[in-house]
Length: 356
Image 1 (cartoon, rainbow, N blue to C red):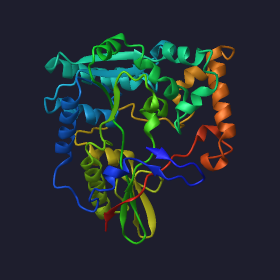
Image 2: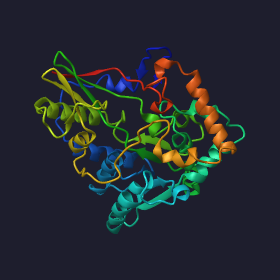
Image 3: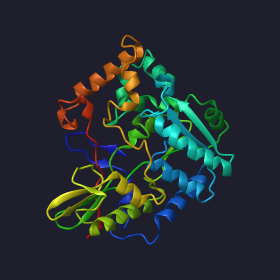
Image 4: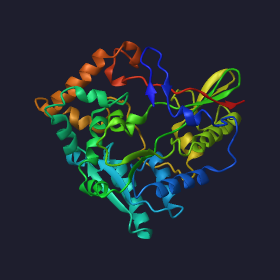
C-alpha cells in the first residue's frame, strides 16, 4: 500500500487482488462461512495466533469466527490504561473489564487452553516517548490517527517476553486485528460503489508495517487480500439492505458518518454504525462501552497522558512532535485547519463498482 504525494494522492490497497474481483456480483456464500474460512486460513498459516480484543464489534466478530467453529486461537490480548486512571469503568477500561473479560471467561470454560493477556499501556507509553533519540521523530511512524497511544502501542508487543521467545524459536506469530468496516456509496445515477479507507494506523501503524524488527505479522481479519470475498460480500449485504430501506428506518440517519449512504427522495441518509454491525456481524448485540473516540489525534484513551508531567521528556517529545506535524502539514490535509483536535484527513482507495 502506498500513496502518491501531492494534493490529490492515489492510494493503492492491494489493487492487484481487489482489482480483479467481480464486485458487481453478490458472492453465493454467507458471511458466516467466509469468516469461518478466514479463521481457518489464519490457523493453517501460523503457529501462534494472537487476537487484539477490545470487546467491540469488529474484534468480537473475529473472535466468534474462531470460537463458534472450534478453530483454536492461542491468545486473546486486551490493553488498558488502568495504572494511570485506576478506573474500571472509564472510556478505555470499561469495555475491557466489563465486556471483554466476562466473555473470555465464559469461552475459557469450554476452551481452557486459550490464554487471555491484559496489557497495561501506560509504562510502555511513557518509556516510548522518553527515549532521548525520539524527540519529534515519532510522527513519521503514524499517519492520520496521530494519537499518542496509537504511536506508542506497538511498543507493547516488545514488552512480552513470551512472544519474543516464540519468534526466536522460529514460530510464526500473527497479530490479528478486526480491521475494518465497509464503505458503500449510493450515487445520483443509481449506481453503488465500495472503497477502502486508510484507517490502518488505528490498528497497525506505518512504522510497524516497514519495521524490520517485528516479531510477528500483522493480519487484518476482514480486509485481507488472502480473503477478498469478505469485503465484496459485506458490501452487497449493505447495498441490498439500503436498496429497500425507507426514510424512517431505525438504522438510518441524516448525519454523515462516512460508512454507507443512500439517497431517498433527494435526501442523503447514512447507515448508523449499529446498523452496519447488525448487517455484517451475525452475532452482534448492542452492549455498553461501544462509544468511540471523538478525536483521532487527542483521544479520550490518552487523556491521562496529556495531563502527565509537562516537564517530563515523554510529554515534551510528544508535544513537540504533534506541534511539528500540525505545522508542516498543508491545510488541505487537515479536517479543520483551525481545530487541531479534528485531526488529519484520510485517503481513499479506488472505487469498486457494485452495480445498480
